[in-house]
Image (cartoon, rainbow over the protein chains, first blue to last red):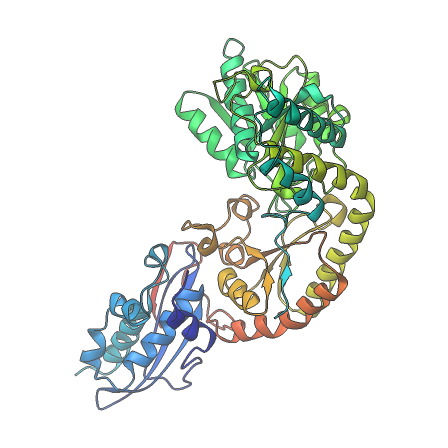
Length: 123
Length: 404
């Protein structure tokens, strides 16, 4: 059902946890579908220096969360805002069709965290 | 890697004796039992012997058994066949909110054709209120359909009492007994049921064979029209090997019902105690009294974690179980059974079912109890719901989208 990459990120998720004094925090999810993702950011000079996640959800939800943290770290906020859910899924060699809907929210969580940072640090 | 199968409510392994009994019917005994020649004659007796074996397990006459392809066919046949045959009498069916989709989806299809269906609610333990059932009966009620045992929670419904109510109001009574037969004693006479559905692969027979008990004198329009097989009640060439194996599986189940029931019950209780005592924040789904559940079934929700990710971790350790989460049901909603019991939606996504079977041992249970706590703890530490101080943005509304 899942690609090897999904299973790799699911079994060994990268950047799990919280950042105590995070500069931005974003949470998205859908309790009904069973996926809730929370992303914590540390930002320096408009660049994502550290990123951590916590996820309640299925294999795809955990794998996409892990993948998005790898993709976002080191990127500028503008670059990170261009990351899409589709790109995350693609980086995992695809997700099963029924997972594209609710488990693929990781980029949304990242964007929420960036917006949270930006609202606290107006340009 | 160790392989532990605890998903016997989904399907069971074919018993070796069953497979042995089936094989000749794929080889030299290939005939069609409806044929008059030597090849047909050789297998006709085998089908009838299997019919006796099935009948004996549920205490009915062999003539009251009709072989089908599966439990879903049996349920479709019972419901649609009744609606058609009793058209003159009425158009109202009473069932429950926790039935298997084979009944629920059939009812929904019948509603589109104008049939009225009452779906009885259940309480938070998943049980029915028989006063509600009695109150729902009208002079248009043609069928009461209540499962014998629930596939997800293992809850046992008071079939004998429901049978007595049905008898009192002269309403036909159908029960989907797919999960009960072979696990607990099932007696159609005691229970006063008119239609009872069985499935072979739930009790050690092959997939693709089932049976429906049709009480003598019960008018039922055939679901599959065609040849004269099964006395005109179900057309289609017999799945001879499957039927023969089903008969053997029923005989084995009957012979070991008591000893296996006690043994498996002890294993289930050990697993239940171990989980509830060893892991914090676990909710039992189903009736708290283990006597009111199938002896093999345990359904629990591990708070803060989602069912599929738990199952995948189990799978990596060789353990096969199942979940009521949306991700494993193929839909976007968690289990309708958990929903009907008003289990919190997050906990419904965490619901995990262990259904034990003949092949399980005490060592299996101890292995599960050993590997389970660290898996649960690891997933909890990954969960934004665990040790959370702030309230979840909105538990009631569908979408949570919040910047903290």
